[in-house]
Amino acid sequence: MSDITVFAARKIITMDDNCPQATHVAVRDGRILAVGDAGCANQWGPVRHDDRLQDAVLMPGLVEGHAHMMAGGVWLYAYAGFHDRIDPDGVLWAGLTDLNAVIGGLKDYAEGLDPDAPLIGWGFDPIFLSDARLNRSHLDQISTDRPIAILFSNFHLMCVNSKALDMVGYGSGTNAEGVIKGPDGTPTGELQEMAAMFPIMRCLGIDFRGLSQTLEAINAYAKVAQRVGVTTITDLFSSITDADVDVMLDMMGDDFPLRIVPALGVMGDPVAMADKAQALAVRSTDKLRLGAVKLMTDGAIQGWTARMRWPGYVGGQPNGLWNTAPEMIHAICAEMQARGIQMHIHVNGDEAAEVSLDAIEAALRAHPGPGHRHVLQHCQMMDRDLFQRAAELGCCTNIFSNHIYYFGDQHVALTIGKDRAHRMDAARTAADVGVHYALHSDAPVTPLGPLFTAWCAVNRRTMSGAVLGAGQCLTVDEALYAITMGAAYTLKLDGEIGSISVGKRADFAVLGQDPIAVNPMALRDVPVLGTVSGGQVHLL
Image (tube, rainbow, N blue to C red; front, side):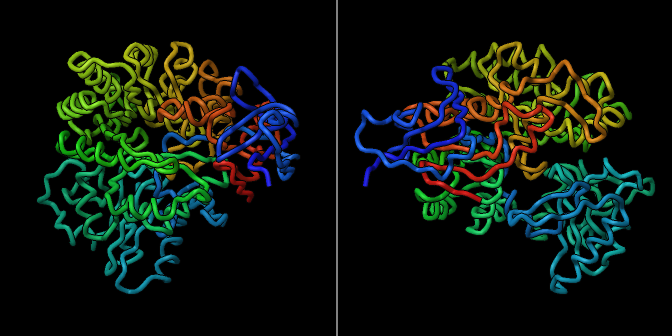
């Protein structure tokens, strides 16, 4: 049998200017050998024709440049979100659209738990609810004997019941940033950002690493990705250990349908974290790419914990919280730049983006060198001057376009106001100033689905149907490039993936329609039939 396979398709969108469209692609040894018509690989010897995809449209395997591997494992907890969501097995979980529904749904879930087990939920977001903000008295209605912790959809906040507060000693005498108190001086149950949340997480065994590094979680992540055409994905704040790498390498062989790119979460000593990142890098394989790091600077806009420049939040809330203090951001950037380690830097608020760019600029002056491709992640409040600075410094930007749909109406009314909301997630500006950009979902914060993310960037529709900032819309071609070649560039993988070009990995998204030919408003509805990963076909 020939070792060259030629796949036929209704149409192939290559993302390669030298051959933008084709009908056939030849694969050998998991790589693309030729692109063109049925005879494209004849000069290489005998070929085997595979017609399984002949009625489909192929694109390069979609690349998700900002997601978290717990998007699969988080379904071990109760879903408490406003929006309908689909779990890794394709089961629909209906959204809980008011506080009574949230409390009732969590009560029902608790009935299936062991009596001594904590109740842990995820996905909740009070910004969608007109009722009073979730507090410990609401959760006490579910149980006063069982500790309860409900993670917000952004994973930057949580709410807990009285039992959980008592377990960690949070009370009227607690004076810790992020432990929110009511008018009576006692904790409401709401905890903001990692310093306040961590004691609860440790006490209740809420372990983001545990949600990411089990065989079940890794396989669930692959299922989630495969359903939406993704063949390369990040885990963008990982506490990955050598033992975790052993587990992943054991299971991620040639037939595993996903390439995973973890970024080591940097907390604490920059030198020690850089040492760890470099030690991990040497263990990289085709399917597991290691060596980058992730910095968490500020919080989330919808939780009022992102760090904002003047004029701040429209409701008069105090400025957000630093997960990493500005002086430490500078120290981390200096160390990573000096060691040649790529950084992914969480910046939701524009003050966080400004501080991060200041730190990168200082690091580049102290340790000049080309090709760093440090990536600002989310970039929600960046305006033209910040994108221009990023371009001048050689930084990339990865824009959280899903926020326009899921939170746009709320940002207009409650957080940043109409003017800034119309230019948030400013992909058009990024394109115009020439900064390299990608688009992302931040799954599980919003559902994984690059075609939906592209739809958001093209149409900028909110949940109410309003167009939020028509001047920031991308074209369909630009958005599709951003979820393939654009995202690959931010991961320093554009020489291997992102286009259907000779020599690259044979990774394809298998689609039921042509995303370029459909109405732009239908882009999110283009069906995904499966993926091809390294030449291995994985149909749904």
